[in-house]
Length: 253
Ligand code: ADP
Ligand code: MG
Image (cartoon, rainbow, N blue to C red; front, side):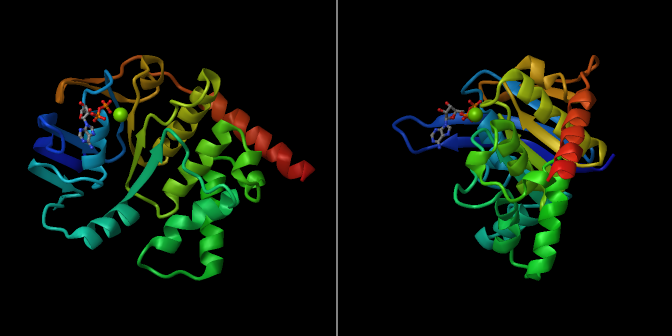
């Protein structure tokens, strides 16, 4: 198993306030290609800080980070932005979609901001392919306010997939969703993971973590537990329902 993410004694201290906050305190961790990892822990334990470091949104105070074997420490801001755009996909709790923009156009955005130039036809086709991966082709021309919360999160996932990232990073992606919709979203992630994409997901809900393959627990900035999930739940039925609904919507469209 080749490691996609390698953290060696990573620390992050925030120095902005009166007292420094030791948000991450010496995390060493390997995540291999094809893994599906849940990061758990109480509020304030350092989960989002760790995710931001893995996502190259922030730099560690100390320690070494190799992404696909390459040390990211030497990269400047532009190189980091390129790396994020090409290798990483991000999904957040609030879906962060542009309101006056269709689902397809929202999904296209990372292709427009990347350094590589694509034809509008290629962008269009890849956006539709991405929407297809999350079962949303029939909703491509809908605006966010015409979509349910679960559908909006699926648009955000499609957007994260458009540049075919190696790793999908999700920070509490089901935090704004009811439990049934949350399981649906886990079905989408499981299907993507089955297709080979590596996923690292923060959640504080044990019920949700049980759809992942490995669980990490953070406490006070440290990794205190790292275990495979033996009794993993499968949400395949939920994804089947999504795809069946999509097929029906295609027929009636
Ligand atoms: P979690 O995601 O597990 O809730 P965070 O990583 O957001 O935890 O926060 C870890 C600690 O770092 C908390 O004490 C939080 O208040 C602090 N923290 C997070 N972001 C910042 C920041 N930008 N500046 C200062 N302190 C921060
Ligand atoms: Mg957080």
